[in-house]
Length: 212
Image 1 (spheres, rainbow, N blue to C red):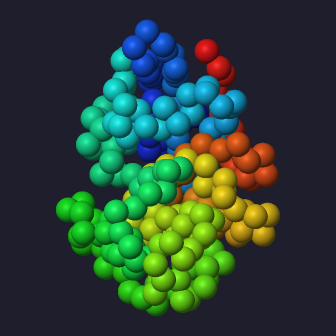
Image 2: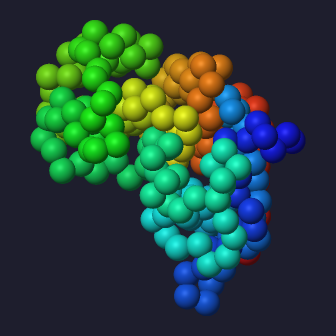
């Protein structure tokens, strides 16, 4: 792989919880516009890996490079939009959730119109009226697609997804898969943890993490 085309590179990453090592000497490169699936059995360390990339858990050894430059977690997050698997929110209304990420300092320059939201929602199979609903009125699958819409609207170079199809039916999986593939064709680089074989098969590359 051509290093100069890599937007994100992991070199010899090791992550441990106490005496238990969950990721050992892991290396990978993510090219610009590439869609990569990270797979493996439950407990193999997939989510720990992406949380380590984002600085949510410490890296015991190794380094992370963005555009070939070693960076800390703060710098990684400046370039990254993240869709977690745990979708809990300190808000009551959907429109509050949509506004919240754009109130952060790194995202304040992004101005998204209602028309842009509705266009994105339509492509993800979400009804227009969802913007006026309470969070407890929408399903887990709708929340998942709403958060994917937010991640894409942040317009970051790197998008990290944790099980983006886990709460979806087959029709919605197809919509989400096509939407994520479109993001990569527009130059976004995507890493997605997944157990979904259909989604993984649509990715440019699959990396399997072995259990320790």
